[in-house]
Image 1 (cartoon, rainbow, N blue to C red):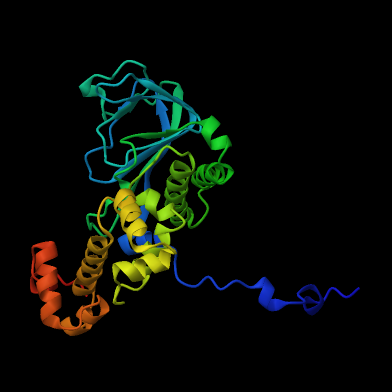
Image 2: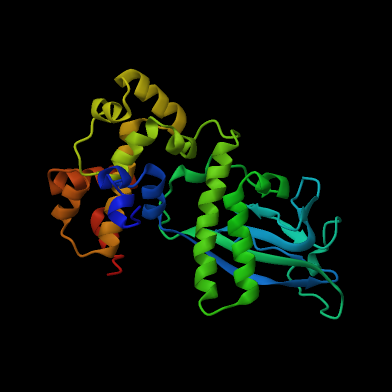
Length: 316
């Protein structure tokens, strides 16, 4: 029997899938310009404590060897074992230390005695969105998310990313930091998926992005903001009736569909005003407005600023 490609692929059309437009979550993460970065990877000796909160990022810590303790005011201390990942979607104040007892203030971020035995190896970093638009992407997540080894064992892809990050940081081959930061990006997406798949989240934009019906309307808004969308046409995208769509969208996302459409258009417009030299009319049309006057009025009503004020912040 021949092993030529033509004999193996008898029906090329059946073996190729047109990806088409990005799904709702992908377009949102792209639009908000998610990125991740590792800034600490090392061994901790003796008595030590670190606090990476307060920088308006989404900090995370990954214990790659040994163990550490998580301290949050008003909560009992929690042990973090090798392989555990903890992250803080809203930059909750916290410390990580060598001891079950909360550390003294003077010990936090004060370094440690390197002559002492190594107790912990840890990777610290953060996730962030370059676009600071106030999207409620993280509102439904808990203030602190801890993924332990037993959870990760049920998430082989998540565990694979963690192992890959640890290996890259240990081997330090050329380009390792670029690879690690890309893996951290992927890690964040996997954490979001894990939180949804766990069934712990019941409503919020994240839940809506995974809903088989509402996500279709969200993808339509994200990918085609210039389209003349109505409540009826968005409901049709979702394969639902107008009333049932409106109620489900409001419950999951926390705002009416047409309000979300307007907010997304203004986010798009803000990016275009800041980072391109396109004319005001071009931007208006890209965001679904037939006239520059209508666009200016909607932008001011929605954002509280004029398009001209945003254009002055241009970075092109």
